[in-house]
Length: 136
Image 1: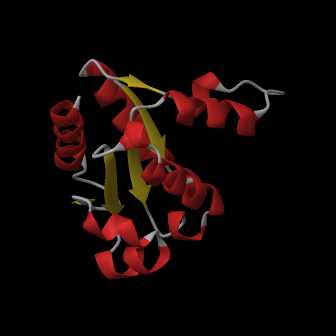
Image 2 (image 1 turned 90 degrees about the vertical axis):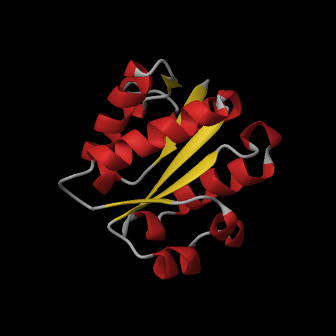
């Protein structure tokens, strides 16, 4: 299964760890650090990655709440049937109420994983991996 991880720049360290864990578990993950080269049309490549993905992990951080790019990525996933039951919101050091006020209303009805902003994130990464394996 191909996985797209929607994240803000502040979540890069967690994103790197998550990508590595998901790849180790046998999932294919689009990695913007390695799949986009200098001079590439990043918007076009990101759009292609979204079209090809079958699941999305949304790392909701304080910075993500301000990101129009992430808003668009999540909106895309919520209206495309290849993502049905395969959008996984992850609250990273963020309370539900704050996240739900900023992101599409439907995200409130999805099973959410909560992990700390730093330290002790391994349990959350395992939960994300298991959730994706369950819908693969």
